[in-house]
Length: 190
Image 1 (cartoon, one colour):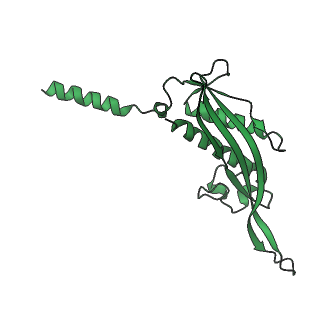
Image 2: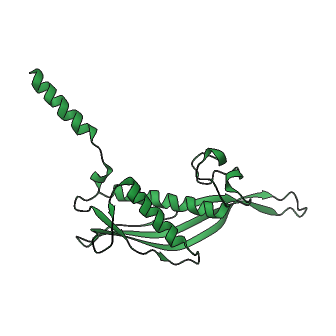
């Protein structure tokens, strides 16, 4: 009887000790190709940044093998629809006696449409829009702007992704958020 209980215990422990997010992806899909990103904006180089970051996330998380489309069982298509810089916060300009407001923080938002397609069964696994953003101030260094640029509750030196010129850093933060959202969507599709 003790041997039976020990055997059952070992089986339960082994069953609980293995966990993989890959279990939620359709079983027949083990590879993914990322189609060349369509950039409908005037922002030069953003397609390359998105491609590199999404590929890096897929490889780092080891969810699906990234390969070329001829060998892939699925394809990720990303269309960059727009990139918007919008005022986020204002303050009264104390330097100006006219009392006009001055933009203190900007928000850069990327708007993308993404389709993940099962090439084996010729069906769409998901087709979504994403709108990640990053914030930046009017200064010259994002690491000293006293702004929570990615809404993670950390500011400046506390946050390891707040470095460099403000707009480019905020754009990098938005691309990172997009990559994270895509990985989450891929792993929760099924």
